[in-house]
Image 1 (cartoon, helix red, strand yellow):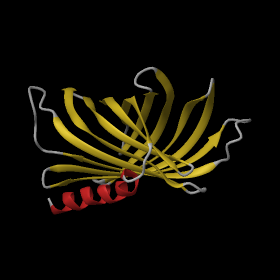
Image 2 (cartoon, one colour):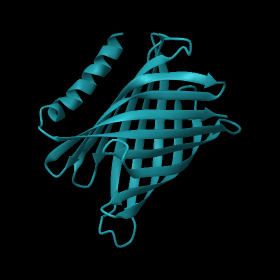
Image 3 (cartoon, rainbow, N blue to C red):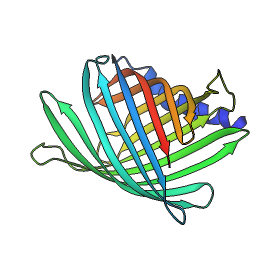
Length: 220
């Protein structure tokens, strides 16, 4: 439990400067579809896909599809290499983004809690003519899943925090805090639903978005 208190304190300290800044607020949704397919000798394929909206559910403005090849490095570590193709609506046009990436993940148990930490390094290339420069970005996601179970579906509470760091000139410019419930639908299928507080920095201003988050995870 001491480790859990430390982790939650770190999340609070990361968010504190953002919480004190006056910013615009929006609502939206984020829908996740995740696959993991086991191969031989510790190898696997994974795919993390997203579709998200702003202005409530009125404006679907961002999404991505990806595919990764991964390998288990013992019981707790795993590494992946992959590619993500993203789309972002800017004005009345859509901009393509190409993201080769490398991922290093760690998973263990902390006093019956499930603890996961994922490091993701992305090289971001934008479509020709967009005027956006190429850039590197680091993302770090921490997830805790509680041991308690709720209701007939035996749902378990989770909390996630992910921060984004641009190596170009923006530094820390995104932070997501998500909490909710996840439950087993059937063997190899997990569903989740929750709330996300998303903060983003554009120039010197921070904006907030409150999101309904849903997800389906398939394990083969």
